Image (cartoon, rainbow, N blue to C red; front, side):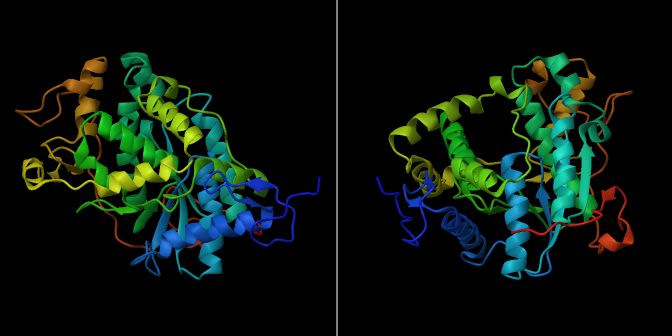
Length: 365
């Protein structure tokens, strides 16, 4: 039987069947269409970026953030976005998982020639995820991690004085989030979770360039490009609520591959009625740490107080009210401050405290 030709160039042998479209393509055409689709997401409408922006890539060492660092570095050169790129990693303190994945991030730092900032839960909150799980158990531990991680990213970005954070959330991740919000009845978050770019009044802009990229295609891209990434799942994630949405989504994808994009478009189509919008709390700043919050205390401060008080997972449900001062002897989160835009030069040996700069950048193709 003759080899199947690529359905795009019609000359080279097809080696890849795209999960997203079903097209059979050669490696070269697969790379081209994948990169072009990401570029189209970036420039669609008014565009994600502004020339001269300092952009932090949320780097975990996994496939999504590694491919994002590779592709965004390449597209920045190819299309002259004019971006100043950084790697920003959060160390949650998970022995045997995050410590190993951070070694991959450090290798990416050298390969892509990007400055790296690592901020740990232990430095910021005085707790590691290992200690949190030891106290609260494996059920609902992802809630603590998600709240702490989101604020840690904003704080790390503020320390880098960047204008923008980009994350490797892909189409599968977004579709899972849509399903989770529907199953929890949290329709207020649907619009935000499907947006390519989000920004609150006092938080740093965040974008998802991989919004329309299927997870399987990201894995294929990393494999054929021979990228260095860490592939082990978090040891605490098997019990996460998201896992049930993921299994359901994979079953749908097996029947109908377009289900992932269809779910995202459904989430985009939800519109909150005026009564629901009026009932939503206005955003303010946390009276303890200064971070954005809809209550007097932000969720991170409330969770940290529960941990410091020796609570188990009941810390998730404690009521707010009364005195917002931290109890005597309790750790507190440092005040949140947006730093001024200060240029950081790789040649200057760091230029800003806590930023590691690469010794040598390798060619990217």
